[in-house]
Amino acid sequence: MSEIVARIEGGVIEMVLHWQGGGHTALKLRMNAGGKHRWTVPEYTLTLVRELARLMPDRQIARRLNRAGKPTGRGNGWAQARICSFRSHYDISVHRASEWAERGEMTLEAAAQIMDVSVMTALRMARLGIIEGRQICYAAPGHSRRRISPPIARRMPRSVR
Image 1 (cartoon, rainbow, N blue to C red):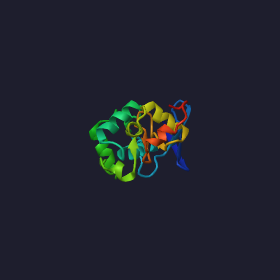
Image 2: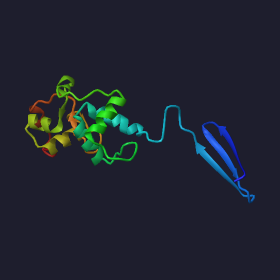
Image 3: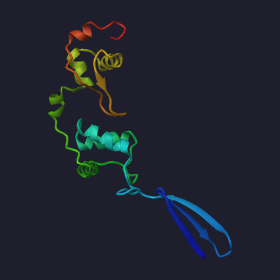
Image 4: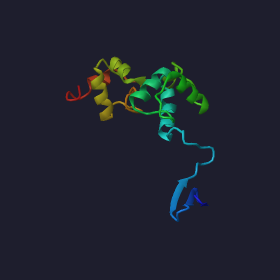
């Protein structure tokens, strides 16, 4: 190699490598953003951990992320210690068991038990909008945001039950 010519334009490094035999190789490399490196976790995973930390302890979060196929920034699987470190790095508070009750939320299983219906019926009710609920990601528990009384299930159309 006889010479390297580099130029930086708008976050991209353009390089031309001049070889001794007269050949040239052009390269374009993206620059890392300030404070970033290649081992970052996607923004979606960060949002997911923020949501899941409100619902379950670190060990369960690790299981859910592994089941959903979301790797760490280095491509490893999740473990309880990695979730704890990740939460600490991004200032995500630890799970509190009483937080669901304070927000008036419950799992789909608990809602089904209160309404005296099967979990599948409660899921159908959530899909039809009879009860309010959401699922954060695949393999995360569905949870309902509102207190549900058993008479709601009795007023449901027979096709839903």
